[in-house]
Length: 351
Image (cartoon, rainbow, N blue to C red; front, side, top):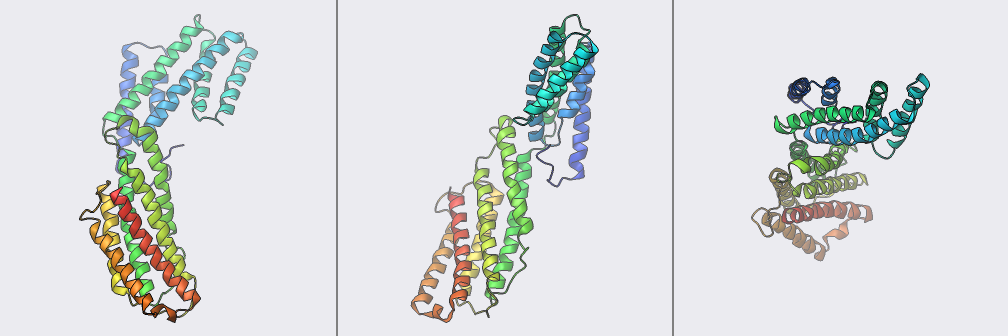
């Protein structure tokens, strides 16, 4: 199953995929025809199976298909040599190969590809005078199909998961800023309750970043090593933290229905929220570390300090004594979520 199954795609991507698949299949057909391969159609079929919309998926399928082909070919050749060319012998060979490969998919999906190759060799190879040579020929044909799919996928208008992930993160950053505004406004306007499902969709989309990042790390980074941005790991984990802080802010607003209070450090909190949003967008749009004490992180660091100083000032004046226990917990929980969100962004930018 493709790792991109749940990701939203657009028609132009599928048009590109269709054209690239056609080119890869045509290239494969041309090669097998030029060399007059007896079962060249298996190469073309392999090309169509391996070609995927995204480069990472194509690379994954190439690796699975090639390794599965080797395993399946060995099992197929072994079956041809072990069992007689009879109906019962063919049946036993198929049952053994398919059963074994299907069981082994529990440990690695590549064994599904191995089962396909084993069945191809068993069904067509019993009549061959040179059974080992027949199996090797099938490996070569399938390898040609894999090669054509790989070359076209990587060289012709590659649709990379790393680009998809970066765009997803940018959109998530914008949505985080929007939710941050809503939560801050609700807090300053009497600590009003918010919709409990406010962050559900955002949480799900941010969690999917890990799936995409692993696909990049395991597959695309093998090909685009120089272009693979190591800072993406930091950005992905930071987005998790940002959303979790936003969830804490939302939970704190809904923890009590007690009457709200005016927040005397409204100016400092608005400034903290503004600089946090600016830092978040710098992180998700630049896809890299800025460095310590830079002009990008300095305003946020100053906003953190200003908010802390104002809070200590108000506490020393005894202002917080007006809150009952539940209201005190709500206010400090919300503030600390804002504070730690800002600190995490500073740390990510300076990482």
